[in-house]
Length: 397
Image (tube, rainbow, N blue to C red; front, side, top):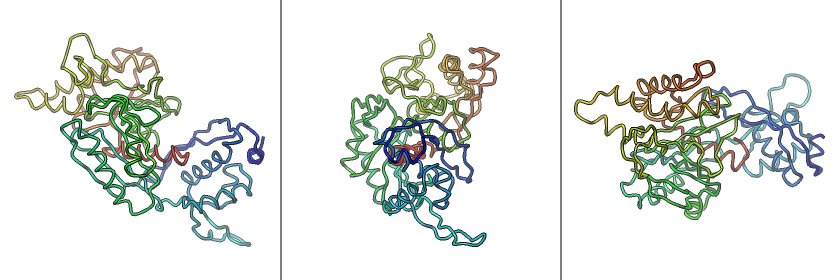
């Protein structure tokens, strides 16, 4: 069935481009193509997203180019582009340089600087970070507030940061993305965040009411893995371990994020690692991975007199390897990406992790498993928050 038949209101299988974000050097991951069932009432929204995705990843092109790339009719493309121009999401850039006789085509592109996205990262041990980003994920302004010592003050700090970002946007704001420690459901309710003392906190609803903007909230590691998948050098199967105030992981399998039945997929920080005890954890248990591996936990142990730094980091890496060996074995994952302070994670900790993984999994298949640092640096959750907003509000992921 043709794309024009979609416009007439029939349900159909439509070739759908699973997008990836353009990295800062201008290159882009190869497109992934999937088939998506489109119902009549969803066809226009699907086609609108397809146009935005195509422009986002391929750049400026004519309406005729868009029709060829998307397999939509020229009439449909003309209609959609006019709507998107009215909405301020697409702009005409002028005529393409003529290459022959005839009237040169008018180029259109996503109005990349015309809107802003606000990203908020609550995962840091000392600060809550915020950024104003373009639709391309370029950070144009940064703000930070001190992470409060008292859990009761956490939301007030988040609101202060959000309001500072709104004031510094200087352009229409598409939405706000928040990456927070804890388990977060589809409605942006933080079901549990032990480090903040949060239980059933409706963070999305509270922020939307306060700043009068669309807000999306996700676990910080789930936001980070979106950035790694979209902007980094990752394949279709990976797990990212986010180490900061706490420890969590985000999982992508076959190019799709995994969240789990209870929204707690990847919530490995409060898994007890080993049977030999260990440090006490904020959740009340003893020997949780987070108690071994979080930045505050590592910093405290490394500050002890006459400490063997390499041994402390090696011990933490072994615990991480113990936690992830069954995950690598069960899911056949090719790599684990680490996100957090390079001075703590890269070196003895990463080496101990990979050695433990290889010692505890099937050699023939998992001897080549990689453990590497992300190249996204401290901006990974902020950029992941931008991907959340692009996906949730424009259908561009």
